[in-house]
Image (cartoon, rainbow, N blue to C red; front, top):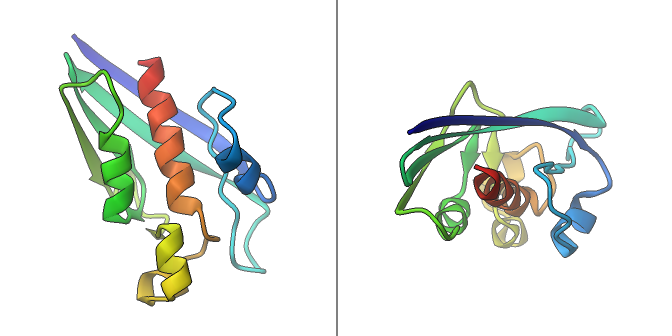
Length: 130
């Protein structure tokens, strides 16, 4: 069976840490903009295509490897294959540790620390609904 699943959530400033600190269910993910000139809210879509017990998970940017590993750790699937740069690029999605270290990707990211973990959480919630 082929299953297509797409979520597009409005993402708002100020609720990222709340979303990361407790699991409330649903498929919304929250990402805060780091740029003072950026919008307060924006949309970020996650996509999944399931073929039997194998699923491709699409992210429209460049999440760090650790994010893909967290997504692949979702139970109930024989194989999970994270795919990046799907339907465009929203930039780098570093993990918290990268923001602490201050490398190139974290410094050039448009998002606050925790963005990668929020994407992993949203993808896991999406996979649980398929």
